[in-house]
Image (cartoon, rainbow, N blue to C red):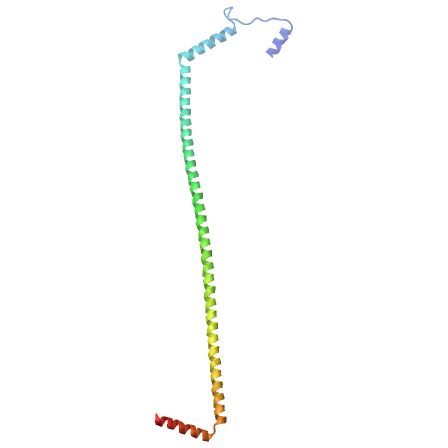
Length: 181
């Protein structure tokens, strides 16, 4: 409300005098003096040195943290390099294992082919041996049958062409040959 009155009185052209102490010191001077005293007390109590010390401590702490962070970064980089090396070794070992597995698989396939070829050859030989044995058996049966047929035919021819008188002459001749000898 006082502001409104001041504004209205100034609008009416009234001029107010600023309050002053001792007739010449106004409010601005008092504020300047108070500020100078405040700054003097700050300097006398060594506040700037305390602030500087606190800032120096903070700077030292931050510097220490930066050094620790750098050390941690270096450790992390060395661990990263170590794990990358281990990963490369693992990849190399996996490739070697894959190559060995491929070689073993090829060897197994080759052995299986060789075993199959050998088995086929053995079975073929066994079949040929059975066929040869069957042929030999059949040939023996044919020879036996031929010999029997020849014996039977000879016996029939002899029986047809020889009678008892021819047999007696043959028996006498055989006895005579035995007696001479």
